[in-house]
Amino acid sequence: VVPTAIGAQAETAPAGEDDEAPKKAASEKKGPSIKQLQAEVTRAQTERGEARRKERYGAADLEIAELGAAATELGVVESLRSARAGLERAKAAMEAFDTVERPLRIRKSDLDGRQSAERLRQVEADLVGVLEIYEEETEARTKDEVILKYRIQVDLARERVALNEAERKQLLETTLPAEMREKAEGVRKAEASLAKAEADALKTRRKSEADLEKAADEYDEARKKAKAAGKKLERARKRLNDAREAAAARKAEAATDEAAKDETTDAAGQAPAGDK
Picture 1: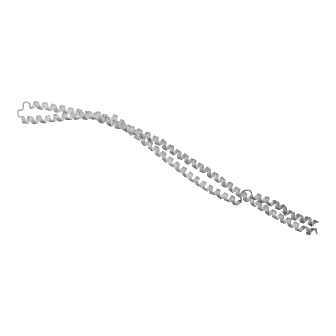
Picture 2: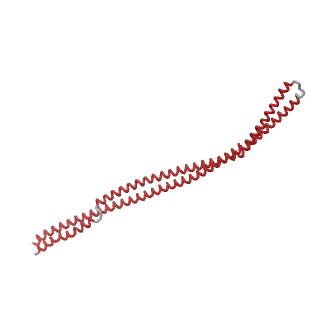
Picture 3: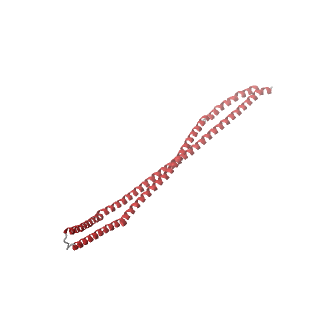
């Protein structure tokens, strides 16, 4: 009777193990396999590498944008300086013309007029003196030659006076006003150039600031993505390590179970011999 009972236990034990086997198999099938996790780690490594590459490019682009902004600012400052200097020169030129050059040219014209008038007075006086001297002269040829000479000098002096008067009128009514308008136009153009330079400077600075801000935002975004990719890789590696540890634990557990089963089998096989 005893051997029969023991034999029944030996036969029924594996049947219990068979019930647990599907459970273990089902447990092992939960979640991705190690191969899948390895592929996930590989993908995460690739993503992190790409993210880091973009981060480096973003840093380089930001540096280029910063250098570009600095160069742009230097250009803007120089453009404004040049425009302001041009306006100052134009104003100085107009002021110098109005306060120095124009009065000097008027004075010179006045002086030329007085000199020509004085010359006319002198030659007219000389002619009167000659006429008085030769009033009693009987030799007509000598008298006429001398008087003609002095009359020519008087005519030339009168022509010089008339020419100076015409030149003075031209100077006061046409030449100087035209030059003054030209100087004023130079100031107006310089003011317009400065206004344009200031508007261009504002536009250029805003664009430079926008480009710099964009580069900074893109770099910040690339850094965040690189950081996220690194964390994702860490998680993937941890899942792979956990899976490997779990697989090793299951393997060790299976080996322990197998050893225990072998011991049970050996004990079951040795029990009848002991009873006898």
